[in-house]
Image (cartoon, rainbow over all chains, first blue to last red; front, top):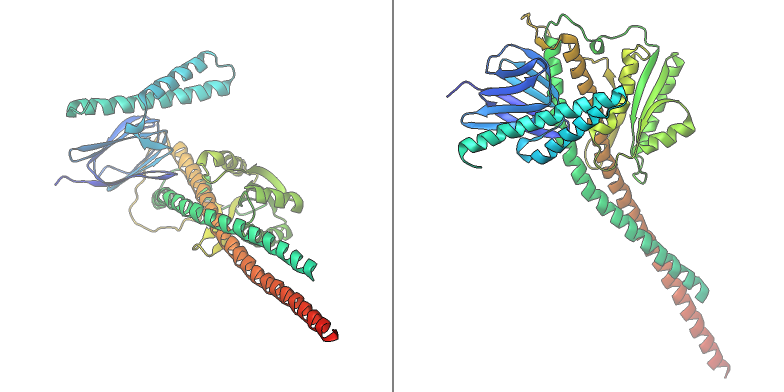
Length: 144
Length: 287
């Protein structure tokens, strides 16, 4: 039995994942981090993107709109801003949001518009990443 | 006599209609409460986890102490977030809360501490409009399913004021869900956090990304937002519970009233019949 750690993924409106896992991947402030049990204490903000939780042969992918990750040697806590299951995401919608965000960037007038557009763009990119990761995995397992 | 019984019959009709309405409201509140309660339970893991992280942070030995964990000595102004319901007909839910707040506000005023109010819900807005008070933020019409996005703005106004040193303490007043039958109005301190000092001998600190201040800032903001959101969701469950009880009482009272009215209606009818009989008897006796 491999060494595992407790992983909790929660958002303000509900619990998303809670259980044992062997590996966790997330988009921390300075880039993607991969966490194994007995990691040193770590606290970071999260960028919009996919959070992958690996348990044995299974892998759960959650999309987060940002949030916080806290790591203790035996516990990983992800406080997601809004997390919905990656499988629920609509690729077309994400592409649409990205297109709209890019369009807004071009036509952006005020600074707040640019800031908002940048956030929307980052979110859309994160969603697309989550979906393509999920799709790759489905291809590998021959489900799609 | 006949006129009297007609009036009573009309009254019975109107009370019966009222009873139907209160009964329907009771059932609606009961079903809404179940949903509100499950929403309330859904918010708990987040608040629990944020608290766990914060207790870890308190146990760590960070190079950076966040202002939200530092008690200020000279308190000149406090912020008070008041969570009320949007609608009435929920018994004493809101008035009990205001009754709890007012002595606190008086005590602060006597101590020379100014109070700035942030109001959630229509009832608090109307109450403080007539009572007076320094309202800095207000949000209402959250509906049955409040979302955290609705509250972020209000929380931000209060926390920005705290950051700028304009207010020194932040409190939240809301109803705590004890069970379906009872709600407990409470005022609790939000910031500065009253974290219990932990004494462990390990001297560790986090690795922070991008840096300690940014990470802790975000954590503290999320904590306050989550706590306020939790209170709002809990208050919504309380509202439905209180409404259910209030409407149940109203339905029961209407039932009692109908019984009493029926009794007097029957008495009036009986009296009319008796009078008629005695008139007939007296008439035959005369012949």
